[in-house]
Length: 133
Image (cartoon, rainbow, N blue to C red; front, side, top):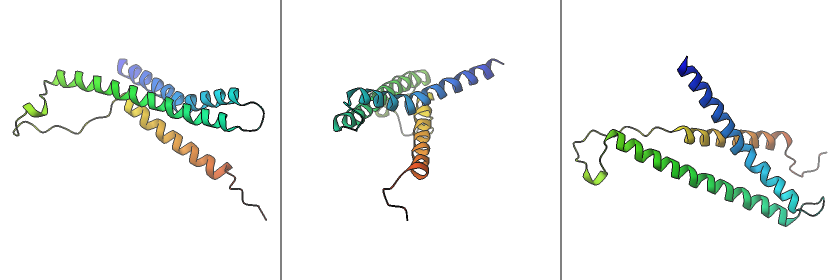
């Protein structure tokens, strides 16, 4: 039962991380943009704030993910006793294909969720601006 509880906890945490990355960051920046905007009509300042803020936030998330991945790879390499590339002979056992970790899986799931939602929104609710006759 311990394995099932751990799996459930990881899935729940993964769903929360995906929801925060997919919806939390953009919605937070839309709120900030609405505070920057003066009236009811969209302003260039508000739009630039939302776009720049989202890009900067996702950049920080990418840097954090790369840093965590690097730390995890270093720890795993030490545990396996793997030598550096310059110190390995050609007869050493070939490395296996790299496995994705929990954070990478969350980022992949976030990308897929956002792509599906944006595509559905575009086809179902997008207005191309062409007059209907």
